[in-house]
Image (cartoon, rainbow, N blue to C red; front, side, top):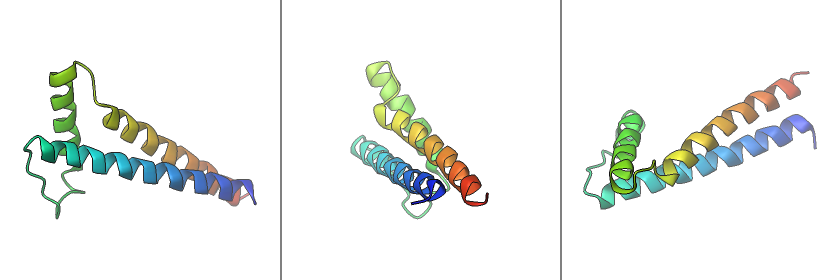
Length: 90
């Protein structure tokens, strides 16, 4: 298998992990009584992330694990996808 395809596959796995963290954040907010607009979830996502961060910092004094996991996995997905695309075009 070509290295570019491997990087793209790893980027896809990382993106799926980010989606998993996104679902966990939404479930956490729902359990705390925050109304989630499922139709506009993509447009209001950063609002929900901010609310999750506020709630977890208020409760534990630290940013929640799902917030960190989402940020790290999405950055990794971006870097791996760019690297894979670059390697495939050479």
